[in-house]
Amino acid sequence: MLPEIIISCNKKGLIRIGDTLLGEVNEENYQSFIGAGSFYLSYTPISGKEVYAPITVKVSVENGVPIFECPYINIFNYKNNTFLMDLEPPCLAAHTLPVCLMYKRAEDRFIVSLIKQNCHYVVIEDERKQLPDGFFIVQVHSTPLMDTGLISDVSVVILCDSKAHTYVFVKGEKGFYKALALEADEYKIEKDKITIKKTTSFGHVVTNIYGVKNKTLALIDSNYEANPLPVQKENLIEDFLECVKYGVEKKALSYLSGDLQLSFSDLKEFLGEFSEFKTSPFEENAYALINRSDDGVYLVNRFSFEILGSKIDNIEEL
Image 1: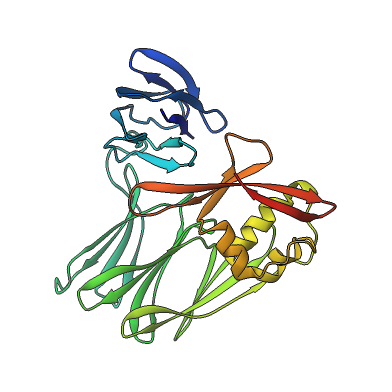
Image 2: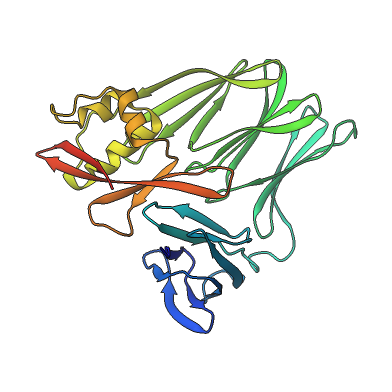
């Protein structure tokens, strides 16, 4: 059975399969087709504030799975013989030469720089040349805050864009390493700990506290403060899924009707691990729960939700 292949890209552009124009993709529009044999998929960007590279990649369907080699395409297995290919074209002309956005000093010997070229990256240089330079690619939504400090006498660097991305770099025996990368929007450096907070879209605050032991960053404590105000019915499922994702247990369980007698661990097991979710491109009133991994193919589970009154009365895997 041939797979259905969905093409998405949040940068506006045109999609072609061979010489055939499928149409336009953008933040709201997908393109789809039935994949067979081998073919060339092409993306041509349409003008915007920044200039993005066109992409052309050969795709082969082997055993019902699209196979390709391209660092700018992620593939999501939606099961039921359906795959989504999400294009992330590289930016070409935001800055053609490296631009230093900010820098800090640490221990009066390390220079920590945030550089933007076609992406953002952090460079940590040792003026004494005793440790190798660190080079780390990061994702940020806007120009972030960057701080250096000591936690239990160990140097740390924190980068936070106050929206969705926080990174912590820790000095080890062989140089700085990326110890933490998570969704968070607030932090505080103290003598023996780092407090990192995430405020969800609906006002729940999740707090994680980290310490440094043997030059390794470790989670010491985690807690949350749920927003007591009710959400609109149309936002109920998204708040529920955010609560499951970030571990706001009591609030998540409060959305279930009396017929759904589930513990939080049961709920997590049923929904599976997911790092993000979005409305399903295939069904109405359904959500795709995406588990990103390091193997290049991201497993997606789809669920529909039935609401009775202000409670979730049924959850069905599609």
